Image 1 (cartoon, rainbow, N blue to C red):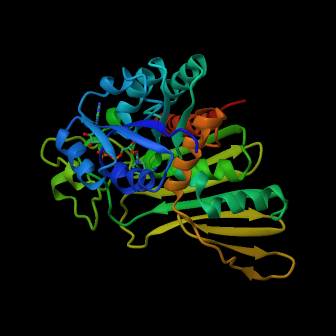
Image 2 (image 1 turned 45 degrees about the vertical axis):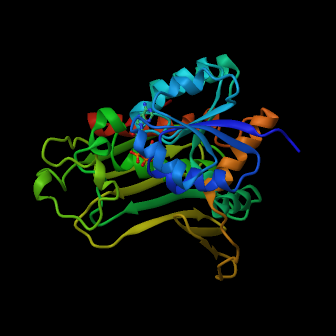
Image 3 (image 1 turned 90 degrees about the vertical axis):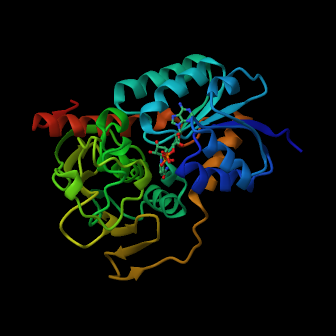
Length: 355
Ligand SMILES: NC(=O)c1ccc[n+]([C@@H]2O[C@H](COP(=O)([O-])OP(=O)(O)OC[C@H]3O[C@@H](n4cnc5c(N)ncnc54)[C@H](O)[C@@H]3O)[C@@H](O)[C@H]2O)c1
């Protein structure tokens, strides 16, 4: 029996309670020595649900000073990823940091450099790389099933669901952006992954913040981070609609994303257009293949294990082997660079070239 890895979890909010703690509870090779949250009641509530938590703290530095801790999970809002991750790496800890890496590419690059300098693993929570459908599509592409994938189109559009309006999510200095960095990060990252990595050539993008210019008057069907909203005194300076076009050395990619729009049709899919075969992936779900030779539609049968569980298993496994996983920061930096350039293009209203 291998010795258990000792973890500290920093941030006991939604992603901690909905994804990571349920995964830890099913893993027999981890100890959760610390659950940390600035709000002690959130860490205490987590301990009530998960008695495996050994200590509850508000200052994450206590966990960093503990030589027994092997790795830290950074599950805080985006703006705090950088500082906590850098402190953890410098304290000699391996780190799992939720997506997006942080609020911009320059800081993301520094984080990657620090991890490599310290010789520590830094894995990012791009959980879709552990989604069974994504794994299957990546393999099918490697096997040549699609022929040449010349274009990928994706849509991540929702009717009216800006999260926590006025709070961290809609404050650029805290979140780094809106629907692109929050939802688009997953779509664009998994596209780059399925393509087998792609080198950026140039891109153009437009971003809009139209739906909640008057925050108090904004009507919604869902605000899925409601407790952090502040429509009286808060800020909303991020994109609620985004559209763009990206050229790479492989496929071109076009996309539309909306946290809110006046179209009551939610769309969450990615189309891979290959010259032999195409595929439509329903985000978080399954895919269908459309075979150009037989004109068949093929819907493979398979189960989809919980992707957060799979990513946590892979990260903890990497603590034993020391090997960088598919979601190690070195493999994710290209998507951080992409997000940054898309925002830059939207701001200056011009194409950005990498050549
Ligand atoms: N991979 C995914 O599918 C996915 C889904 C949702 C959220 N996320 C990411 O997870 C992160 C957290 O999102 P969330 O929805 O759980 O947010 P949240 O606001 O629900 O939880 C964050 C928690 O961190 C705590 N916190 C903030 N600063 C802290 C500090 N310095 N020390 C200790 N605790 C601190 C807050 O008090 C809060 O309880 C974000 O980066 C988000 O983008 C990822």
